[in-house]
Length: 434
Ligand code: URA
Image (cartoon, rainbow, N blue to C red; front, side, top):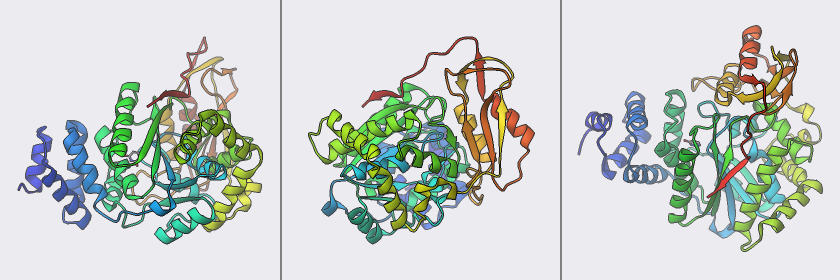
């Protein structure tokens, strides 16, 4: 069999690797025998040359089998949602307690930020005391007692993905359908959940920007999950603007709480109702969408969704009083308006760039060792189609503890908004069902 140098050369030149070569490579990544510089070279060659379906399948299976597989079948159905990543995507924080409050078990293994997107684990970590390092017995207990668990990948579940994910994040090798599929599915298939709803983002804030690429990604995720014996469905949803007003960890935790308390932005509520209804239908087939949606709406209005989030926070070691009083979350030291120079309509928001800018002020990591500033972020005041007058704020720059070049950041934030004479065409929030 080829050694690592020949494997890299094959991929660099556009050749196809065998399943044995891929298994060997993944084993070497996990054991540390293959150093990070060679793993990074493999990732870059894979992004540039692409991986065939056979290579993608082999990579997914090798990554899944690189660690433990959890068995939650005695608690089934245990439902999961996975988003392919966006800016301001705080859906997990709302959806898990919401669906649990409506009567289904939800177990979600979440990740740290990747590329320009914020990570669910970092958003949860903004809640004082909240722990996501649950082992299998704790996850089982949370599912039994609370009905939901939000946890990080442990060291032993899909360890190959942990290593590759962290390297992709800092080597500009996220944007590959094959690497995304293998990353998502290796951990989903190892984490034992029995039904998965995929939220496939599309638009200028998603990893895959066109509807065609998003469709291909969604089909690959749904079909491969079904082939592995899971219930699976997908929705392609709009990511041509941040989801909701808040971008940044504590700000997003606060916005999620407001949605759970029935006070938050409509688009987050709507996406949670649609994805939540898909999850409930998996739990109780053949539950009709309308009936499932009514149950979720009831969970919002009765306060049960918010109470379930309190119980979940408490079970996971956090301060449940943040639900009653979000002021207990880390608060920005300063909120600086980024104002529009001209009057008109917001026709475009450079969403991916907003994600990267948020990393610059402490919302995410450029290097693995970087620390997060939980209070930092943006609050979007004007979104697509909104009318704005000259001098009005487009967004607020929220600074945490970290020093930042205020004036430059403020200018860059305002420059993410394109102002035109006419309102733009607005894409539907839920673009397609797979
Ligand atoms: N989410 C993941 O878990 N992995 C990816 O590669 C992209 C989004």
